[in-house]
Image (tube, rainbow, N blue to C red; front, side, top):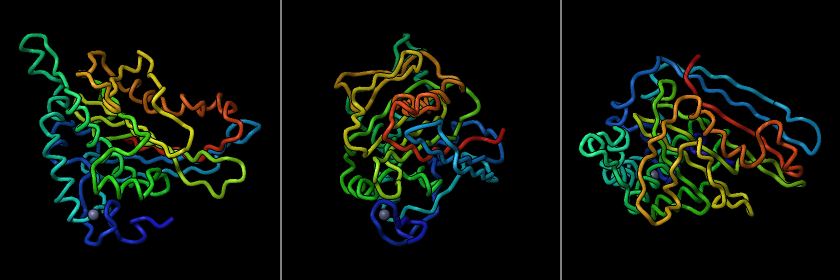
Amino acid sequence: MANSKETGRCIFCGGNGLTKEHIWPDWLAAYAPKIGDSSKHTANFMKFDQEGPPQEVDRRVNVKQGDPRSKKLRCVCRNCNGGWMSRLQSLVKPVLLDLVLGNSLGESAAGVRRVLTPEEQHLLSKWAVMFTMVAEHLDYKTIAVPTEQRRAFAETQCIPENWRVWIGRYQGWRWHGNLIHRAAAVTQPGDAAARMNLQTSAFAVGKLFLLTWNTTVSGLDLIDFIPPRKAALEAIWPSGGAPCSQPTRIIFDFRFERNASLFFEYLGLDVPLATQLPHQQFASSAVVRPRD
Ligand SMILES: [Zn+2]
C-alpha cells in the first residue's frame, strides 16, 4: 500500500509541501519532564493460527537518538498543519492544559474537579484522534487507520465510526511524552495479505493519560466494551452525553502498560487466549518506549 513516506504526500489531504513537525506541540512538551536522550522502538510481528501457540515471526528494535518529547515526523503538509490542525489545537488547548495540570486549580479551590462538558469531551476526542493518526506514522508498517478515514477527518473533523477514546490521570515517569501503539491485522481465512485494521494508542503528557482504539474490522463493535475499574478510565468518546471528569484514581507506569494492552485482551489476542479467535490472524504489535 502506498504511504506518504513513499509518495511524499500529506497523510491527511494527499497534498504536497510536507513540513517536519513535532508530534507533540511545543507548548505541551513543556509539561512533560525529560526522560532521556533516546527512545527505543520495538516492533514484534506475531501470527496467530488456528492451532498452536502464537508465533513471533519478526522483531525489529530501533533505537533513535534524541529527546522523545521532540520527535518529529514529516507526514503533514503546510496547509493542513497551519489550517484545520492548528485551529483544532487552539480550540482544545484550554481543556488539554487543565487536564495536563491535573485540574489543580479546581481542586485547590474547593475540592471540585474540572468538569468536562459533552462538547469538551468531543473536542478533546477529536484532538486524540488527530494525534493518533499522526503518531501512527512513527512506524509505517503498523499503520492501521485507512487513508480514506484520514481524508474524511481532514475535511470534516468528524470522528470516524468505531473509534473510542478514554482519559485517565497519569502519574509516572516512564511514559512522559511517549506512547505505546499496538496494531494488528485481523483476517479471515482466504483473505489476501494482511493489512493492519485495528490499533490502540496509549499516551501521556503531564497528568493526562489518553487511550484511543479503532478498528475497521466488520462486526467488531467497540461500543460494548466497559473497561475494568482498575483501568481507571473515563470514556469521552462516544460521550454518554453527560458531564464527566478526569478520574481521581491514578494510572502509574504499570497500569499505563496494562491499559495499552486492554484492546488485545478484550479481543482475546493476548498470548494464552489467542485460540479464542480460531479463524483470525493477528499480525503485528508495535511499541514505542523509552530505552531501558
Ligand atoms: Zn495536508
